[in-house]
Image 1 (tube, rainbow, N blue to C red):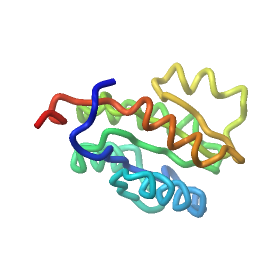
Image 2 (cartoon, rainbow, N blue to C red):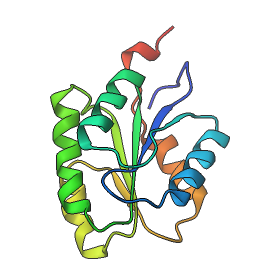
Image 3 (cartoon, helix red, strand yellow):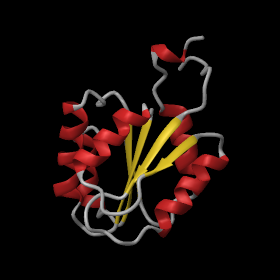
Length: 140
């Protein structure tokens, strides 16, 4: 991956009716502390709201945090919404209480990585640093 001329821009989102955002806030702070520009959408985001935010904020990475168990319904809808608005070029990662058996299907949807409870913050940060796309607008 080529060198960046600007910080990685990341959107951290809580899709669906999941009202627990402590983990998302911890992750947002870890990414910010690693030098990324982080936009946190807050609770109760629809797939369309997440996609619109990704477009408006011109992010490189989208982090989805989910604890509700609705990931197999919400994640495909989010990926479709991102494609609809032309932001399926962003790296999408997910975290939360996601059963191991669901991870292969989630990755098939186009989500780059899934981080479960107990994953060290540095592992998540390093994954983003290693995999965030470098776009043409990074030049100059």
